[in-house]
Amino acid sequence: MAHSHVKVARRFTRSVKSNARIFRVLSREAVSIHHSLTGDVGLIYSGHGIEAVWVSKVAEKIDRRWFRQHEADLLVVIRGRLRVEFPERDSATKTLGPGDVLVLPPETPCRAYRWPREARRPTVFVAVYRVRPTRDRKTQSRR
Image 1 (cartoon, rainbow, N blue to C red):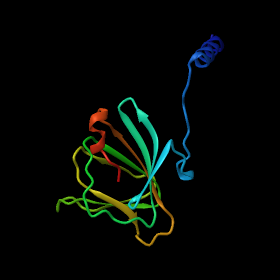
Image 2: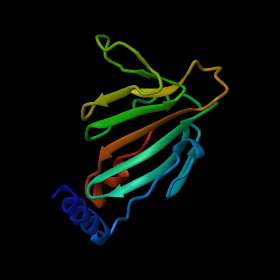
Image 3: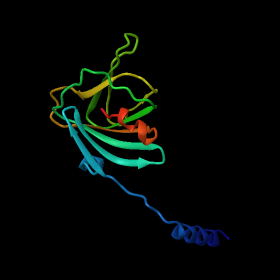
Image 4: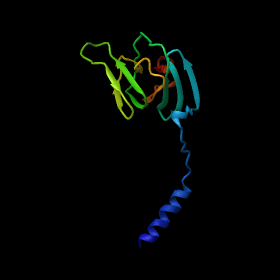
């Protein structure tokens, strides 16, 4: 009985069309890459109302302006350490390492940069966030 159940599962799996794709973030694989003074951003996925990007920071300038996302933002550190500052006095500066996940509520101002500043290897993290309809996309910029 269990044997026939396995056959059914295999048949179903073969009939489902998959567009699964692997991105090797530490090899900088992406659909597209945007370079800026505050780091490189690689687009991993954009669709169904969400975007996922990797961000690589090495010898980047610290943007003195506060970054703010309209929607919740999840940051997962892959390599190095990431220092995150908040303008509110009651919000302590946070330092994240590989495997750490930071959940930023909507409209939370912050700035993030490689830590320590003299580190030679890039700090790499993945950010996942909801996107608004196309007409509002210009207001949503990455790190």
